[in-house]
Amino acid sequence: MSRSLLLVICDFLLLSLLALARFDDPKEQEQTQELTAEELAAADSAVDKDLVEILKLSLEAEKAGTEDLAQTLEQTRESLEAREKTLAEKEERLSKVEMTAEQLAAEKAAIEKARAEAEAERERLAQEAATIQEKLRTADTERVELAKSLAEAKETSAVSSERLKSMQEEMQEQQRMLENLRQERERLASEKAIAEQEKLTLESKLTVAEAEARVFATTLQTARADIEATREEKKAIQQTADKLAEGVGVLAESTRGIQEEVKALQPQSLNTLFDRYRSNRVRLVFETQESTLFGTTSGDYTADTMLAGDGERLYAIVHIDETPFRTSGLKAVSAQLEMGGRVFRIPQVGFLASDPRIVAVAIPQSLAESNGVEPFNLSKDPLRYPDAVLIDSGQNYYGESPFKLDPADPRYVRFKSDLFSRIFGEFSPNRGDIVLAKTGEFLGIMVNNSYGLVVPALSSRATLSLGEDFSEERADSVRKMVNTVTNRLPEDLR
Image 1 (cartoon, rainbow, N blue to C red):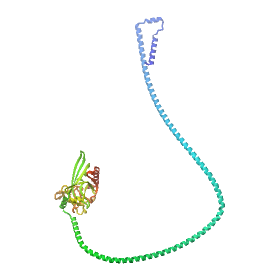
Image 2 (spheres, rainbow, N blue to C red):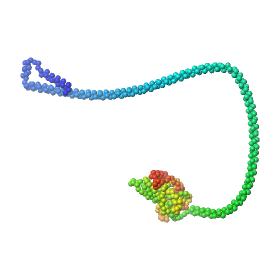
Image 3 (cartoon, rainbow, N blue to C red):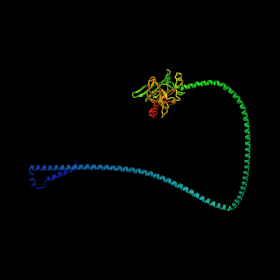
Image 4 (spheres, rainbow, N blue to C red):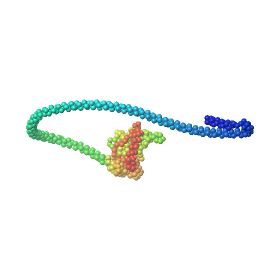
């Protein structure tokens, strides 16, 4: 219980005692004692009610005091927080002041250092000023001495003038002598030039005389050579007569060569060309390991073709669609050539520079000769005849079709895509068909159903190693290169 509540209760009890006390006469006290018990009970009840009321008031006052105390406590707490914040700010300002003091100390040290340097500079300048002052004093001394020397020079000037006049007269005399010498030198030079001219004239005459002597000697030698040449010519005529007999034989041989050349230029029949192709056909076989969605799978590609040559090298020519090189995800590729009943490993393939869609496999010429395979030479004049022979190596179809040179790109010729009659039924040009000239030479290969590539040379744009040296990255690079070159072509040539 709080002290204020105790004070209130004590005050109430004191007042109650004072209210109950009687300060009347004893008689009046006796009369009061004679009050009935009911009156006393009523009085006690009234006192209790008053006490309760006082206690209620006291409790309310205590509650109000408690609330005031709580409010005061809150205000005190806020005041303490404000003081703490103020103290923190003061500490921060104090820290800044300390930092400022350190900076001031550093600046003071820098100023002291600068002042020391300035003092040293001042001392150096003072020393230089003293040195300059000393030099000035020395210069004044020298100036005085020079003034003395000038006075002495003025005294001797008169004597020097006489000497100068004498020297000038001597100089004029020397100049006259020099002029005389110069004139004498010019005279001698003129005489020397005349002598040189006479010398040249004599040398020229001597040269002419020597030349005439050489001409006479040459004429003599020529005459002797003519005599000898006449003798040799006589011998040569005899030898020519002997060679004429041999020339008759050579002429006959040349005539046979010309006849063969004319025969080669004559158009050959369709059946003859196909029979020649069939007799010299070779086969390319490619085996692959390819990456697919379901793992690695094996693949086989087979293409029948013939050998084309440029006089130095032989190549087996096929369209890229008959090979695996248009396929992405190649992990391994090996190839072999079947020729004359024998099988040969292919280490590398090339892609023609004129159109990389055409794959060329290099074959040693000795290998073809040893297996009895006759190559088709590149056509030297592919436009000699307006028709060409097309052979579908896979289906053994062959036929003849007219073609026209593509005006936009002369590397390609256009064939009619309509069906045309052949020995083995109807036949229409297709991608990969071999194109032969009517003279029996290799003209090119079909790149689609309408256009054929005229192969002018067998050089490669890119190569790709096979077997153990096969590279996935290189194969993918070559595939992208072929697609890029193809996409750059007009739509009709793709």
